[in-house]
Length: 384
Image (cartoon, rainbow, N blue to C red; front, side, top):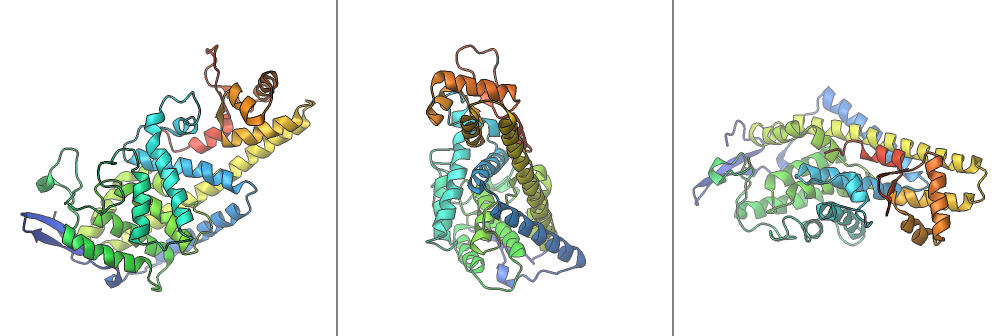
């Protein structure tokens, strides 16, 4: 590790004969606002406000939130190397799923977010709160043997696969320094400094990744915390801002900028990158909401324009496949409480209307169907 500036921290030599980086307190950092940063902040705030406004007017807000969270969970886990697609996750609740084990980490992410939202009623975002999220993230998945819900008690490091402490790209604070850094960060997270919330969460995300307080799951935890902190601080009413896709598509720049803050003190460049991500992901979420709303309305119109006596059941089926876009005939029979012939007829009607199609037409025993346009909208950016 080579330090070019001490603005963001210092390198300390540990008695065990290695060097670690200890970040400066965020309370001591003054961000230099130029025209570009001011413009990016204004644009990010504008589109984030638009996203929250559109979300508040959604008739099926909880449905959209649950599906969009799954998309975020997929991308966040893919960054860590999980080989599962959104389709795998959407099928994980049915008997036709072939990658259930690969989706467990993603399911944990969704559950951790839901736990995080519910905990906001009882706990401020503190390290007690963060430990609870971490415990959910690692429950029964990769990293479960690395003290879920507990800060590390040994040194960790970041670098190429197979590297050791002496050859690592980055070495976070030693344990004694880590505790001091965490206490300082917790105070900063809950401080009332007159700093834009978007700049503040950008700095919090950087600092948490730099301290690297867990043996595993730091990246997932850091990304998960962004929408939760914004919700707690009333920047968002609904946790709909997810930056994992932006970080995934700009992975090299993301990691390079974090390193540039540490060793060159380039906070402003990191913040500008973060704000661009907020704007882009807000715009994409707005587009997704509009596309899904349009598809739902068009399908409802097709059903109402038809002559079938089963319109009531068809509308019920549409509501069901919006929640479960992969399904088989038995799912319809059980979900709608209809007979097998009625379920088969409803599926046939939806195929004729072009709403769903069979995922494996060669199967004779148990055919799975998919709500194509809906899944296609959600899948954008989650391809392996």
